[in-house]
Image 1 (spheres, rainbow over the protein chains, first blue to last red):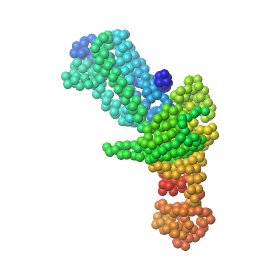
Image 2 (spheres, rainbow over the protein chains, first blue to last red):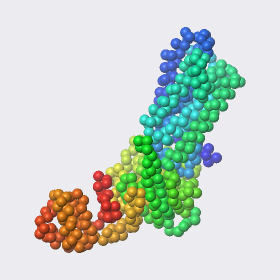
Image 3 (tube, one colour):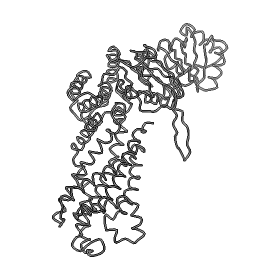
Image 4 (cartoon, rainbow over the protein chains, first blue to last red):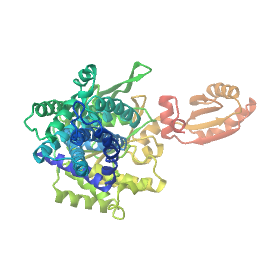
Length: 253
Length: 333
């Protein structure tokens, strides 16, 4: 009860900050919109290759794009935390009896809400391009993106708490996020990839998320890909969240 | 009144035994052990203003961070308000306030939002938290800016909010890490008054400072810390009288002359202590004012050309110098 209330307080504080500067919600949309407008049309001509059925390129591309948004949109949230570590805000919270989980969970829930708004906006923009949305599948896919956001935000916060510096954080996150997105079949289906690349993608948890996202957009809710995606990303989220909490507890020590 | 746990001694609000903190710092691929705090024993009395005086890096902040539960000691024991630091962290957190050097004000929120949230984090309900925030806004004269986002505050305004945040739950003990650093003289004076007022209200204050005047004028007890160790402790008056001597500072044109003067003074003057530092000689002597004319004559007969002279009553800097061989003033230049 105490922890829930503290999580609520931390969430309200974070969301107030976001609403005070709502421009960031939209700035983060710039990149996926560019992909949507300037990259997706290229795929149309490719329709018919493995993994990209003719006339269904939008249907394949958008679910991947949303995973990318979840991945990159949440990967850099640690920057705000570095600033609050530097100005002593986090230390101030730590000297109160506030539950340590609540301090991070409140923030992460804010990141989830921001991401879900962004995912809905991108999906709406994609509808005129011929995206057909299966409502049940879409709602479940939002849950998947939320879990991706928890995993990525936790990782970002853990690194922020360990490095306490923007520079190190930026290079570390870029080093991780780029190969992870390349190896997940977001841009082009992995079905096009040579075998060795497909095998490499198998160790990337986000490739399973992309598969699950595509299955959900196709309306295949009871698909095995969906279950696998949720289990793998769910485990990743638990692991990174636990790591972030440990990093918070160890921050000063 | 809140009741604490079991007091080791009723009069002590902080008691530490051989509190230590080691860090491992990694530079050029090599691990290096840094002993930040080397076994500090503290006995801070209820209701006093206790000051930790020392240069930057002496271990003041590290000690305070350990006492505020956010830094785990490497070894040693501490009781705070009767609670054991290793076992009863939640109770300690609930009953102490801590304001770090960085402050802790959230610049994206308004003063009111900062205060209300902080009160709620200490378990107060929304209504009580709001009235508590109002209480502190009135008390610290923040009403003209409390509704603005904190990013627009001046240094002094921000500091007031920092301290209000540390006190919002009416703690019995307040830890302040360098509370007046970087403040203009006016804000500084205001803060000193406020700290004295807190003492009058029965709150124990443990502050760190590297300002001599702050330790001297504000604190009931001062512990001088250098290199992770307490080198002297007592009331400012006591510490200064332990020096037992005035300081006469002679300036010479070269270090050689200063060295000669030192030898002469050590032999002829009834000095407590004579030290050379660059071109200057520090002569610690009782009754300096009366003896000075004779000393000058003595220098004259030995052809030691005194370029400047300065006599001062003992200060905390002399205390620091006596115990560490360095001046705190020079450290802070």
